[in-house]
Length: 97
Image 1 (cartoon, helix red, strand yellow):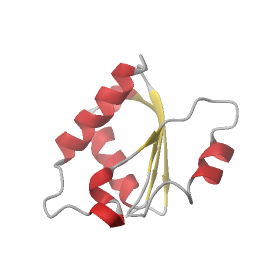
Image 2 (cartoon, helix red, strand yellow; image 1 turned 90 degrees about the vertical axis):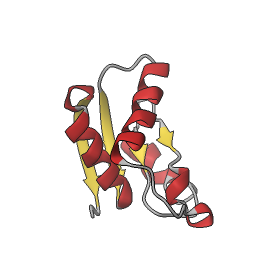
Image 3 (tube, helix red, strand yellow; image 1 turned 120 degrees about the horizontal axis):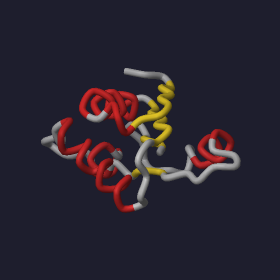
């Protein structure tokens, strides 16, 4: 599960995500509230971000996940780790904030 930082979209991340996920299924989570073209005035809470991730995992029947977060995504990953440590098997933070 890959969480992006503040960006314009996934275009720049696809090569990295594919390389890191070689031989694995990859889920690229679109954090709409932190994309440059749609920054929200009021950011979702850590609980709201975490609920979105739980929904994604449950929808794909994933009990535990390898979680990758870049920049702002590393903060989101940290919130998820704090709230749901039982759902993470591995954590990778790239350029964490």
